[in-house]
Length: 475
Image (tube, rainbow, N blue to C red; front, top):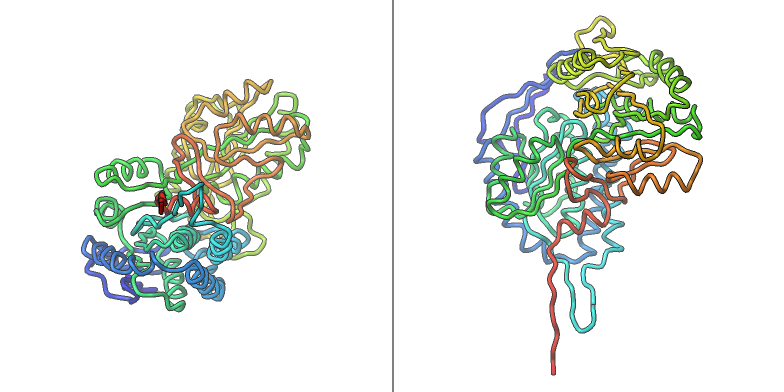
């Protein structure tokens, strides 16, 4: 039984003031493998105070000093990526093929932030004035269970690059990942207080970060409902806020596309991440001319894709993260049936090796109307809604007729059409003839209920700064 009994404040592992114990589950077996002791309001306040003390010195640090620290953080995280891989598989249930990328991404975030900072001009001369990008202050970073380690590292990397100090509230469901990250980051010997991590509940630790006047900015990744609550709470102290929220991303296939390649893209876009990915391609739009051919190939491929042990290198779809999430997904599948969608594949919970793990078959609904629940709401599971269209204007109207706007994809051999459609889609990322590529140097975020602001790249760095204009008149 793994016991995680410390938080990280002011450069030290300390026993939290909070006493609540939270069970950690292995979604592939359903078994409890550990417990984490959660921090409380007092722990959050202590972490904020430590970050506040560290801010004056770090905010005045030179660019070269920040870049050097980011490189050290990359090195210590890269050295622990195997341990992080094990933790991701253990508590998130993603197959080893995807978890390997997730573990590498966590380390690479620091390296990419260093490269971004090298090219980023923090002082800009415009005429006789100077525009200075100053660190915004102490920032609160709140991360989700589906990519906990990656978001801890990527958010922290750009906050430190800007000269901010941080208080991090990771998902309590992902404490094993957090522990690996913490042990690695501690080895970098950063000045005390630059980053502080408190495991805790959102309505306790997260609420204190949101309300505390010493926090100047919040970066949150998670559900739209929680993002709205954070935005309302942050308004009291006029905090800067970056929100990367849910998605119901449209994956649009035109008749002139490479059908076989598009089928592979549709499968990987929703099922390889078990649908527990904010930018999952959960709405598939097929031009009617190829509906039958495409659907036949899609269902055939999905039917061969069985959930299996995440540790098996051949596995392409792992376990749903928790029993609660599994029940939520199964509830959406029942809603799809009630609304009249046609179940083409999957739809059931399955057992793997006789365990009590949380596995659901790759599920595909056909004959979906855009106003159905399975087409409008984020399911966060391996459920694909298939819709059809006859022309460009129709599919763009349908694709945009949704609360979310995180990502989208367009499949066509017509380059002009691909770019024309991409410009009309209300989405923060649009892939053409591929799905799901990520680059830590490029901005990531969404439109509408998918949030605002951007993670990663120069845009993320800008969000951690305040802009000061200095006029010079020495006459």
